[in-house]
Length: 430
Picture (cartoon, rainbow, N blue to C red):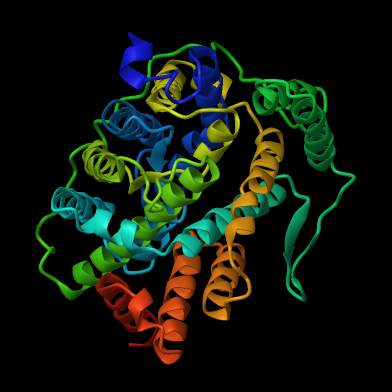
């Protein structure tokens, strides 16, 4: 049944490969189960309820991706978007978290409508091929940067912005040692290399004090979402603040999702001859449904995760990968203490190496044409430096349009590219 539904042989994969890929994806993004409640609880929301909402929203979005889009991508409440929810809308602008949840809910509804009318799909397909390759490369650098940061190998520095961390710390020891271990396993073509490395690092981290063994029972019923579910505030939706909040949420979510879909699909050689993501409409619908359901459950915007690249790197090619990931999120509801004990130092090496895997599409770029190579460079470099996939895409697309426009190559620009450029100029300078 699984073979027929997901067409495993046609996609040159197997049940074992897909399951390993799905577990690997989960392990590299399981941190969201701890981080998202911690960030959103700063607004006064119930932290235990947030854990359940985070897991359930990930399950909903990822299941739609698995069963409708049949793609190996996983979804969960997005990093950055959750920080905007807590620290900008609530703490910064002074709104209630109920107001913020309402904005996320409306955003999800709008995205469902845009997806149904193929507007989001048109935007994805309008991105030039070279920029799609650069998005994959930029995301690679971005998630490698996250991995290095999570392990303490690089740290913030007032003088130079970033600097080398304390390599004698236990976390750095574990991360660097695991990096070598996974590298050896990969070189020997060992299946599940990333997952093996993550588990090995988690075990080694116990005597070093990096992995915290939970106290008490390892199995428990998930906390109730009653304190935060369906807590909307529609009294202030017709305000200037709501317009600003909605525009920001729509903009960041759209291009974070587009970046993740295009980047990971490019790395997996899943783009078709036109450079389009297969079943992209269904993939975008999964994002929209996940966001809408997430708001109802009581959490911030749900988006496609770039960590899906770790599962793709393990050979995941179909919806069975994401179905497995959704299953792992379901198990996490009952084994939260077990899954939350995996330290950042254990997942960091996987992110770093996946970043290196995603560099290969850059070889397909024509660097002799400066109207192509300069936008590619800006896309790649701005993602890690701004700590934002969306900003990297903005710089790349805007420079692409301007260079083509002022060098007489307007035939290479679609109407959608002009519209996007105008919106980007509006965002940055008005």
